[in-house]
Image (cartoon, rainbow, N blue to C red):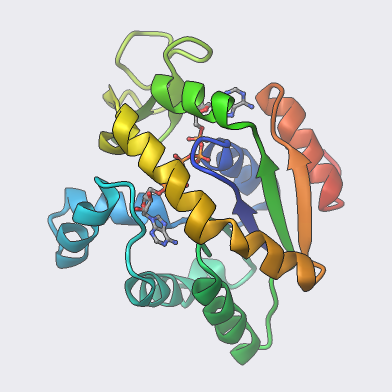
Length: 216
Ligand code: AP5
């Protein structure tokens, strides 16, 4: 199965992706995580990406398309994969369709997370993430058991650089301007499935599995 999770910053894509890859047995291709890893390793891609990410802007399409193209060729993607954070522009969506059809594949579902802006801001203001495994927490609604330490891998839990208030607003604006049109692109192709992404994590997971016809 090839599945894409679509939605604004803070809508819960990363949180649900971690659950879905367990259930579906496919890898998570998170472009945000790939870029953060490139920054951590001081790679040329990371150095370039950081200037856009820290301003709440998108990294240029050409870089992102190449990044995902290479990742899709890896062996663990043979049985399908879950896209988290890609495509984020209509140009990326068109490039993805072209890459997949070139391999005789297609995107099965695009699940679009619906969350009101005020809730997104609350979620991002309180989000903390594991600097090792990327697990996502929230200072109020989902704190790690021991303060500052990841429940899963014992890594250090930190605040993301782009979760500062001014950058969050810029990311939400970027979503409305550059990314929201991707929803219409997939709607026209009959592949868009909208879900209410409010509620607890297992309720949201149940809705996603229901809409893609997988038994929980
Ligand atoms: P990326 O890392 O993809 O960030 P994003 O899309 O902005 O998404 P987030 O990670 O902020 O949110 P999420 O929806 O995954 O929510 P989460 O599950 O963490 O991208 C970062 C940057 O990289 C971009 O700004 C851009 O610069 C660049 N980039 C990446 N891909 C790109 C591309 N394709 N093209 C160009 N540039 C690209 O949850 C958030 C919080 O809510 C957590 O605290 C969580 O615990 C909580 N939460 C989750 N679910 C629930 C729930 N059901 N109820 C209550 N709280 C919940």
